Image (tube, rainbow, N blue to C red; front, side, top):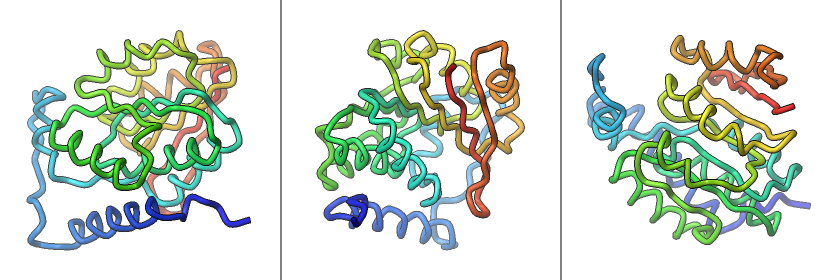
Length: 218
């Protein structure tokens, strides 16, 4: 059986986004690298980075797709929509399961508009709700039992976001945290790696890309 993650129109949308992200990464004419002020608010940082693609690796996307197909969650939460690349993998799995909904968060209004367009173009907008604004506020509206979480926004916010949604994590819920070699992820890692907090957690490399932390709510 061929995995339907590569079916159209989702495959074309995903390929186009990765192509533009790579062009931006390798092009001197792309948006200049932004030096984020130390005291910048989350909103200010999101606005400064609104033109920059920050995609997950294809391996991490395939991992998410596989986990969702296996677990068949009714609710998936994503912290950090950006241009929608990770959300496309998640939405593809929900579509192919025939069950479930993605709630994803984004501070940049420009990226909200772009991601909305990308989900529509890929034919998966019906299984996605984008929550514009600060995830530490907007995710309070998600009151259903959560089966899978992707954390891929500002790293120092991983732990506050987890704390907000933790009461709604079902037993066995899986949390995937991306880019976990960053120093500002340390408080989050300390928390999920402490068995006393109710998680089993492990680090996993992604074929040369930054590590991800996979945690299960016990």
